[in-house]
Amino acid sequence: QVATVTEYGAFIKIPGCRKQGLVHKTHMSSCRVDKPSEIVDVGDKVWVKLIGKEMKDDKLKLSLSMKVVNQGTGKDLDPNNVSLDQDERKKRTFRDYTSQKITLEAVLNTVCKKCGCKGHFAKECFMQPGGTKYSLIPEEEEEEAATYEKDKKTSLADDSSKKRKK
Image (cartoon, rainbow, N blue to C red; front, side):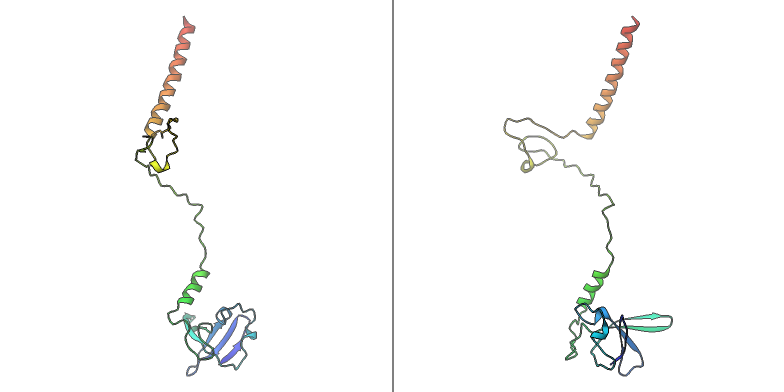
């Protein structure tokens, strides 16, 4: 039986118990409820299901639901609490992981059967018959090439300074 109706839900008297439980307006109907007073009035007899209990300041608070119980027969429409679990998942906060970078650091160590180059499969190969071959440069060779270029520049600078001294 409905004891009081508030703007956020209705308090229900539980038969055989002095306690009252709250049916929040989100648990009154499967549709959106703006005003609980439009759904229930004080003194109405309703079927409810206990969906949660919480101890706060040495008081037991009971959470009830009307939307998971058939109001005509009192039959439990959600015996395994599937819809309640879904509702809880919807209310969880979304975590944005886009700021965290994903690094794989994986190298495809294979040789294409079509062109003979490393780093891709034949089905991914874009080489035209008789066309130019391109292959990936391994990282070690890149470092060697960079040091070779530096050595070359310094040797050219040394050669030019030697020519001037003569």
